Length: 345
Length: 246
Image (cartoon, rainbow over all chains, first blue to last red; front, top):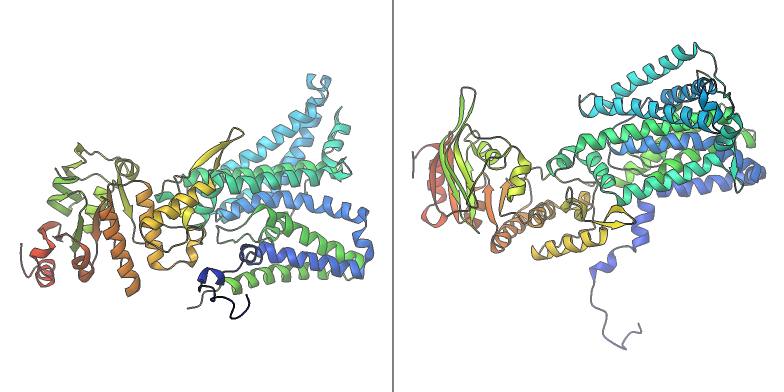
């Protein structure tokens, strides 16, 4: 507006508010981790141009999908204010059970129907993983046990069962559906790895559910203030049980996919993955205090960790530093969040 | 006929008598101050009205019907809402989300029941406008002042079309300016025809806004009179027991 041509605009304090994209994007941890992620990719690409080749990207996307899938479930649990330490063990148990069931059904009439041994084995393995999640949820929501201790116990139970069932021996996919299994678990659609497609589809579904379903709203409410949620009529135990069940299911699904990728399910599969999964969720913006987190963050966090790992290899850096670097990233991510949201007293 | 009528309410926890023979009534569109020292039975009375537990003896009538609450949900369904001292809000959600928590508006899209964000935001804005509050429904509760939080909690009760609202110490631990806001909120919901039970230790606030005051001492009702017919001095004497009954 030219000075002197008309009266000054009325003072409007609403204009002092940043634009809606400004208010949203940089305010979430997921957003600035996303920015850091892009910066990191550029740096690695400059240092090692091979990074951005389709072959390498394909490798990365396969590697990180398994962690990211589990991280989706873990993020739900973390939003509820809990934690699930059993995901690595559930992943392994589900993988070996799927392989053993494939072997079992191959000796039955199911082997006559194309795909039946695979479908039965995979579904039963997933059902077992969901059942373990359900038990976690029931113990935590109904018996009021601490999530940390309950799932720590379940970590041990599921890993122990994996060794008991296999006697420590690796299990392999056998029977008439092995080729089909490989195609579903480690194939490609439109040159995208199937693992990545499962991940993206599930991540989108989760994001939509969190945003649009009453369940999603109630989940955030439970994580924010469980007592308040209960007072307003939210069925808190039901919400809590649902997230542990979904976390178990995600871990189980990831386990079956890993078995297909490796062509085997060793009994020590996914040992220690729970920490990587939690790290991915936390880097992606899930807050262990509860009430904050999302699907995009889980995927982003897992991708960031894998890009760092891959970058270290490509650049030729001493890979022993990789874990140090990931650890520092975790701390910096939560540190920035803390500084950003610190209250001025 | 009053909106809420309690007759001969008694409450015992084992050998401890929390309430004895309390008659209590709240008329429509009335703000009743409920005052008493710690342990006088205020919270017991509130919890009975809110349906948290049934009284040991006595009868309750609400809106002309006898009440038998099995839980707080029954009370809510009957039209009684409680605004708790700690407000029962989720800091990590928006104002609108909190107003509608547990009562989300939904619509069907492709056979799925999904939340109707726009309708909830609209209705929340409308409710807050009715209360003349400047609270923005899309702001996270974390960023709101104590008075704005009270506005949200009260907007919740308006959404439920509650006939009776119980406010538990709504003016404790907020600033002087916000106290004025909250007292205004109470007047507004009264003007909309809702009845209010205002539980407080703050005598000036009760004298500012209430139409009537009830004083409890050691489980007994020792006074129940129009605010104009009494004084802070008399109420203080009743609370402490310097005056037996009025």
